[in-house]
Amino acid sequence: MIRPRQGKVLFQQPISMNMLMRMNAKVLVTVIAFVAMGLATASAQITQEQLRTGSDEQLLREWTKVISGDEFGGRKPMTPYEDKTVDYLAKQLGVIGLEPAFNGNWFQPFEMIAVTAKPVGSRLSVSGKKKSVLRYPDDLIIWTTRATKKIDLKKAEYVFCGFGINAPEFGWNDYEGIDVKGKIVVVMVNDPGFYDSQLFRGRNMTYYGRWLYKFEEAQRQGAAGCLVLHHTEAASYGWHVCVNGHLSDNLAIYDPDTRNAGELAVRGWLHEDGCRKLFLAAGMDMDKALADAKKPGFKSFPLNVRGDVKMNVTYDIQKTHNVGGILRGSGQNGEAVVFCAHWDHLGIGKADERGDTIYNGAADNASGVAGALLVAKKFKEMPQTRRDLLFIFPSSEESGLFGSAYYCDHPAVPMAKTVACLNFESIGPAELTHDVVILGGGESDLDNYYVAAAAAQGRYIYFDDDNSDGWFYRSDHYNFVKKGVRAVVLENGQHPVDVTKPNKYPMPVWYHKPCDEYREDWDVSGTLSNVNLIFSIGLSLSNNSR
Image (cartoon, rainbow, N blue to C red):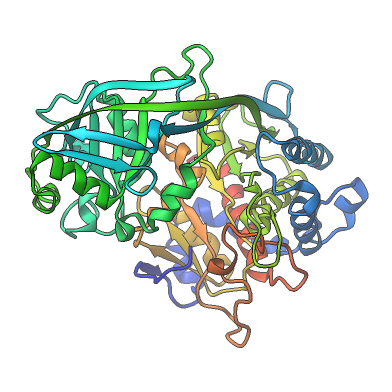
């Protein structure tokens, strides 16, 4: 989240009423009404009494503290700590006064498969003009998401498909004119814009640049497998991240009817050294091929390299649960505004330098859960809105956005009637800032709601167009975007109101580490302002015609 900002600023200075009146009038009516209510209404906690008497800050802190406590064990899905977490959330939603979202049930269960796969002999041998041996996990890391004990591809053929992108709107199709059915495609991470600012959206990565897209498209093309060529700068992380993330427990949504037989037999990351070995076996120039693949008009080609791919596989299938509650609106058309905050984190794992093994996930994402609960409570205390208000707490965000993906395929409110997704992701702690950072702007009129809501708080929106690391695609809202639902990402601002108080809790210090723990010295002034910002946007969306 914390990186140099190169985006567009809207309304750098505090906004005058004349400027406000030139904005969307319907947005302003609800935003200004919200401001008149004050920014610190009574909030909810565990009991009805605390619902009535608690302040916003007290309850935001308490929810965050409880959910990120050691007794919740890092909230890893498909562990006993999941039961504790989802039961707690359901109870809080009930205390606040919401109805169960899933046909009278707080929970939306679905099955996940956790797969550990390893190539036989910890290597893959390939042959073409020459022979090469790719070592696991130094040259490549591979796995599967099929429910099978073995993967056995005989004399699999390798094909180089550039970026592995089929993007008609950008005039780019790496699969044009080549048959990859039953073959293993080798593709580059990111998209052409990373290397040429005139292509795609320049350094502002599109979804075509994400490694998950590469697997999805290879599967659509009928390939047997897909290896994504790693590049540290283009991926925004080192090779160790690829290895550590896939040595064991590779997760996927499980289809009991097909046992995931339709999924790629082989998924994986390919180290540059491993890729060079493939090209060496092919008798081809890797550097020239990669350079050519970055240019328009590139044509994919077979490497004329083959080799058996054999993996021993162990897997486990378990249920996990999304949690959801709903506040019914007065309208009759069934439309809803969705508020989303993933409940899961990383559980118990490798000890840090302090010997702490619990990855508490206080900022990521207990703070987001607390913010969503606080907004739910605020709406419950208000007159009924026109549209329904749906609060979804997905599972398994950390392992691949699986909970929100399942929800979007099996929604409580049809995607066509979901007017927007407002996602709470790692919102605390944050000091009060003049700005609010937005990723994913420029795609819909949702921008107007954020601009107006920030202006009503005397702040301004900073539209960040540097998405070179693909952050916009890394949280639950994006599964809604893929279904055509409006969403952007709110990030904490970069320009504090009080410059004498430095950030005590910068993201690089705590991200996915045991030290992401709740502390009483957290500054949540900015967090609360951002919660109120999302609340006011939700209020506008819940009563307006768009």
